[in-house]
Structure formats: structure tokens, C-alpha cells
Image (tube, rainbow, N blue to C red; front, side, top):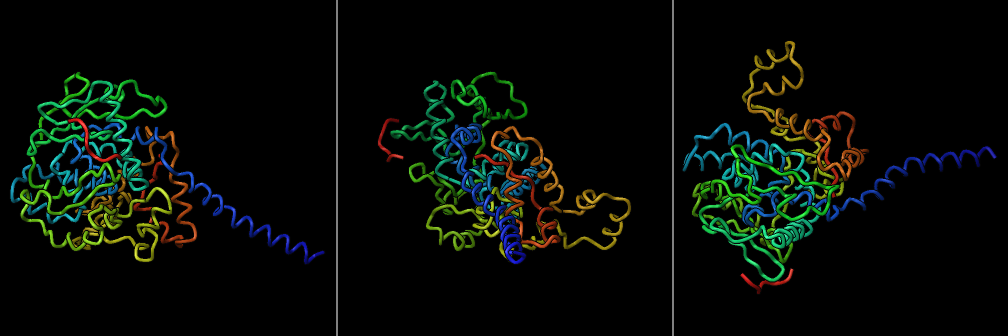
Length: 393
């Protein structure tokens, strides 16, 4: 009887150890974004020109680089022409992020609304086609409401069920300003209200408004994405916009992209240690592999030129966060800002939080010290969840 009781006890303990992993695996199958959530996320940008949307979708998967690029743009407003081109090539951001330097208004929005940016990136990583379908659905709603038309700023092209938006002048791209709860007609999902962003200086009360156009320049040389609405993905052509920047090392990028056969692929290296929404996505992009357990020196904000004297002065009566931000050229300030924003109650909280999934995915894969090191570089996630051309123009 005593041996039998021991066996029962061992089986019971084993069951308790297995149960959390089994429960987590069950929950992982329920992470898809609903249609309501996807339209909530894409509503603020669905009426942007296609060329700009493709860059935003790719760049949103690299939220830390968005923050860095926004700060860099604000600090280097006087850079122009070849000087800007040369300095931009020195930055080690993803090309999609670099392309948005041409649109400081958009870059600022993505940095200011960082929780939204991460949600958009998470949704795009989870299902590119679903995100692009939601954009098309919203465009059809705007058209039905009479708020999507060709103007002197843009061309709206109808190809059967697909709506394409292009700039009227290929050299100038206008970013529309609109309230998503109005421009699409009566908003169908009151439980999932989208945010809207009015740039500084905005005074128009029109439903759909264009501000000053952005003349295509140096940064747009990195804009290699194109919306493939019928395939449900973004295509890459590094020879697009070649005339805008002669300082880009295209050979380097060509070697990197040639294996993708023209289709965009997320690059986990540019994630900079920011946590993915779930463990499956994290494993797919190598976040928990042995080569990424140690965060890279840049993600830790390490500065090769920092002197010992600087370390000594920071050690006197400074908080840890203040010491980190005191390091010249570090990323700690941006990372702390991302953590603070990510930990706030999001406007998109209807679908819960991904923090539990991130913790569960780390369980058993790090020692406590390494897990602390990883958590220092991530912030709480949020859970959200074509026919061929030939129609009217």
C-alpha cells in the first residue's frame, strides 16, 4: 500500500509539472486576432498611400528602432541632401525604418503611439494577409461612405475588389489626416475604438484632410516594399527608388534578400531584444535560441567610448535608470520609455495582455540571472488579436 501511495504521489506531482505547459499550449492556439481587433489596429493608416503603408507595416515589427529613428530625426533636422544620405547609411536600422525618416510626422506618430506600433507589428507578424485584408475592408467602407476619392493629392484606383491608393505626383506623397470613427461611416465595433492622430498645427475640421506633401528624398531610397494585395504580403525590390540615394550599399542588402525571392521577411536581429507576442513567434525568429540568450552590446546600451571615470561618476547617488541614461549614445532611455508605455493600460486592452505568454515561453529556458538580463530589454506585450486586377479606375 505504501509503494502504491508513493506511485500515486509521483504521478500527481508529474501532472502538476506538466499542466502549466499543457495549458499554455492550449492557449497558444487561441491567439489569432479577430476581425474587429485588426480593423481597430489598421484604421489609422488604412487610407494612406500604398507605398507608405508597406513601409509602415514592415517597420512596425521593429519598435525600438522606430523610437531611435524618431529621436535621431529630431536631433538632426538640419541634415540635407548628400550629408543626410551619408549619415543615414551609417545607422544600423532596418531599411523600412530608414525610409520613414522621409516622413517625420509618421515616425513621430509611431513613436508616440508605441503600444499601437507594437500591436500593428505583432498582427503583421502573425498573419500578413489578414492585416492587408483588413486594410482593404476599411477602404471599401470609406468608399461606401463617400470619403475615398481621387484628388489632386492622390489617385484612388479600383481593380475589382481591390482598392489601390497612389500619389497623383510620384515625387510628392501626401499623408491624409482623418478620424477613423467618422471616415469609415458609423464605426461598427464600439468595443474596439481606433485612435486617431492629428499632427502638430492641424486645424482643419474636414472629415478627410491633406496637409503639406512630403517631397521624396534621400530616405525614400530605402523604400523597397510594395503591397501585393492579391498575394497578401509585401514584396521587396531593392532597385526601387535607386535614383534617390547613391550612397546605399545595395550589394550588401541584395545578398541578404536574394534568398527570399522578392518577398519580405522579418529580421529578428532588428528586433533589438523587444519581446515577441508569443513563444512560437519568438522561436521562429530565434529570440530564445542560444545565440540570442546574451543580448547584443548595442541592445544593452554599451558604449565602447565610455571611460572608467564616467562609470565612477555615475555610481555616486544615481538611480539605475539614471545611470543607464547617462551613458552617451545608449538605448536605455528608449527602452525604459517603451517599458513604461507598454505597461500602461492600452486603448486596445480588449484582447488582454501578452505578458503571461512571454513569461511562460521563458520558463525553463533561462537561468534566473539570464532571465533578468532578458527582461531588462523587453516590455509587456498586448494581445490582439484577392482577385486579380481588371476593373474600373
